[in-house]
Length: 424
Ligand code: BGC
Image 1: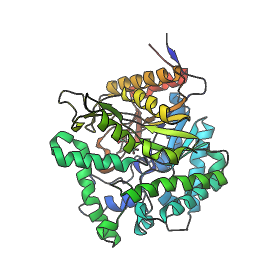
Image 2: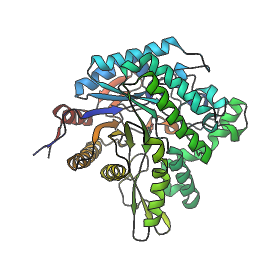
Image 3: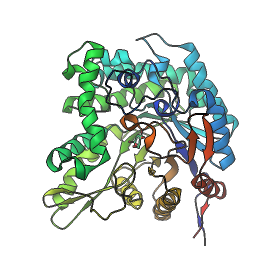
Image 4: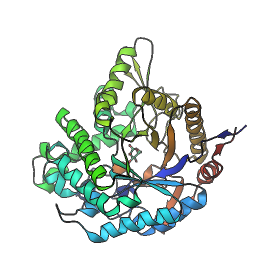
């Protein structure tokens, strides 16, 4: 018997502006990528030209059978200078939203997905007490212009990511690069990140606070306050829009004797932020793999485990455990706003999707309100410091021609979406 999903389940895919659009020239990441001796493997450049090809991409999603699309609006495009809004950028996103609706695709809009305008970083970025108000002002502008077209808004993507980053740096320091793999590479590059930006910005290295990086206690609070202030601003401007935040959550497991460490990790990565989310309309859950704790702390991935291109353990069954965990602590609808795998073996992507969806189905059967699944990612794209080499997409892109090449996993997932059911 196929596993039937509830009527109205949202089947979609996710992207983020900087990773797909191309030429995000007023953002902090663009600045960093284009520094001489940049820590980035390559530049985002034209990325996959989604800025110009969004119509084709949205139509392709609909053709595949998907009914929703999570993408981000780029703050640096909308407000390239503080307080100066770019009407053409607003019109661009209006057209993207209209294209979604015309194709019967429900948009889920993220207002901040890692990148920030250069001017914000000059003013102290994500450690500045003024940032929540600046972010809320931008959100109010977006929603007063476009709110009627936006049924769901995520304020901040992976608001807790700095905690994971700090942990990976710690693991890197205690274990050496070889065991931690590519993520370490990414984070080692991040260590030079602030130094490089410092020269470009003309502020001391310790005062360059882009979003992706370790955060002080105060900085974390600033991020969550930005969420709360943005929520109020969005509600005022667009009362019909449902609002949530997204968080990066590992499936936290423990070996015998590691229970306390695991409980501490859950508190640090998730529970401590509960009060900021209580007034939200939904929760955006993002999961890629698990972490295991023993009596001495983090347990490295076993040698023999299957790993993804990111150096993570291939572990799609983690999604179900994370959903169950979140639902114990938060009584609200859950959207899976990201979940996916970086691999060149598309059959493993199919297996990953099927396993993740079986987990979601089991949760729904038990009464947990999971409302949608946004696979990461729609397209192979710019994986931040790691450039274009990590392939998460349902659709490949030939970057010499920007031709879209749907993979078998895209039709596989599209068929599930179109029938609203997962085969045995
Ligand atoms: C981020 C995406 C990223 C993905 C895969 C998430 O942490 O939101 O921007 O591409 O993970 O690494």
